[in-house]
Image (tube, rainbow over all chains, first blue to last red):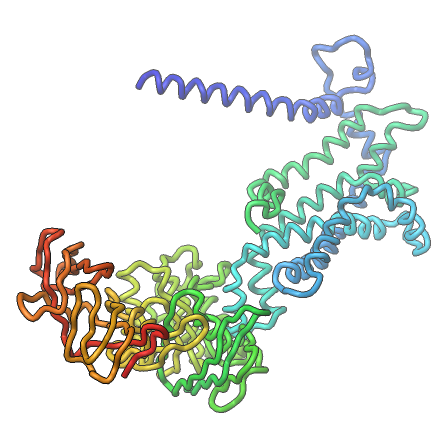
Amino acid sequence: MASVRKSRSESLFIRYLILGAWALFCLAPVLWFLSVGLRPRVEIITPRPIYWPTFSLDAWHMIWEDWPMAKYLRNSVLAILGSVLIDLVLAIPAAYSLSRYTYRGRDDIGFYILSTRMMAPAIVAIPIFFLFRNMGLLDTIWALMIIYAAVNLSIVTWIIRSYMLDIPKELEDAARTDGASDMRILWEIIIPAVLPGIITAAVIAMIFAINEFLFTLLIASTPDAYTMSVALANFTGGSDGVIYNAIALVAFLAFVPVFLVVVAIQKHLSRGLTMGAVKG
Amino acid sequence: MARIELSGIQKRWGNVWGVRDVDIDIGDEEFVVFLGPSGCGKTTTMRMIAGLEEPTEGEIRMDGEVMNEIDARDRDVAMVFQGYALYPNMTIYENIRFPLRMRDVPAGDHDRLIRQAADMTELTEYLDRKPSALSGGQRQRAALARAVVRQPQAFLMDEPLSNLDAKLRQAMRVQIKHIQRELKITTVYVTHDQIEAMTLADRIVIMQSGAIQQIGTPDEIYNDPANTFVAGFIGAPPMNLIKGQVDGGIFTASGITVDGLRSDMSGAVTLGVRPEDCAVTQSDANLTGEVFGVEPTGDLTYLTLKTGDAMIEVKADRSYRRELGVDEQIAFDRERLFLFDAKTGTRLR
């Protein structure tokens, strides 16, 4: 009995050790960024190791005062929220149709939607540039909204679809005999029932949009439409050289809101990422 | 409230038959039970009445009006499902209210109607809860309340009790019948449970492989089965069906002899006798068999005898006890024997 208890506490200790090491491994870059971001620039580029770092808000002041960071942040937020909204408006009816109706070519359409995600973005970069230029949308957040929405639409549709497949058919039959039309069934029964799925899909789309770089760089040619991700790249050029502490601080600030959202919905998130792999 | 007529109803998915040639006239205020094994087409038939499936052929009429082209939401029927199908995001109150809102019942009447329905199903104290906070029986009652609340032309119930345990099922059965009698609403009820069918129905429709085998009152179905399927499906334990030969009014099978039957028949037949029409006897036995099983149930004892290659079920007295393997003699009640064609299973009258 005693030996059993001992081995159990031992295995618990080992488990925590492994998890702790893993957590440290994951957190180290984040903490490193924070530490770099809150030190004076001279201290980061010195070749000698520093054991007692100096705390400094130089980078903080720099990003807000010397750089239009508030504008970049606003661009990011507007483009991302707008794109997620477009995705939801398009994906929810599409997912409902794919999960509930039987019609010719349904599976092919579903696969086509998913396949748009399989292509390397660089392949369509040039055509998209000309497309947006001809529409006069270059350098606007409208273009970013549309492009982020297009990139994420497939994944959002498929996540919501997998949640919809889990809703018992009986529920819709009941609503139909109760006198509800298709739109009311979607609005009053289906959407509330798949709300966790919709939130998960929205967050995943948000994360992808925050990280989007290639199309943003292509479309945003002046700071008017810069987002955080492209603005970050601009800290590297120019006569000032690479401004490491500002880069680190902006990267950290971009990371925090996403991190908080993910923590808040992590229970749903793992379910959304398996996308009905177990059932459906 | 409504008469429901099905004439020449068929349902096919490509080459797969769901329902074939169903004709039935369900009277106003009648309680009709569709009974059959799973896959017999009973649920499909009900879903066609609800408008959730379209018949491939045939006509569905309610009060004389053809319903085939009318959408489910415009047919004034309420359905209760096996899995309850309560809306998970709404409270019980909102669940019961849903059909009222969808059918544009004046909002001022909602509260009164909901409370009336909740009262009838003893749910008043649970109205604020979500379905997930209710037990199985309470959920089933909530589903019933949602059907009752708008006083539809007809109730359609698809195995509503099969997810409940035996005791609860019996209580709900009584409640369903009571509500139906009180509201006088035509009801179609689908089940594979013969006890539910016998206790609830004004008429039972027995189906197999998509076709109706017999329509009749519970008494007719039990005492006058049309074929071996009906005879074997109703009754617990089911009717003994013994294959043998009849000639000159005498039926013979291995270990079994029955005389005094109609003398105008000869050839291969199936003899049917219910377990309660078999009696343990000392003389005048129709069969002698070896005791294979003795199962006391409290109010009586099930006795299983082995004779030749047939097993015969007998309902014996509750005090009946016997060693396995000994010989026992059984006499049949001659008034209660049924003969069926050995090939087609049809009753020979």
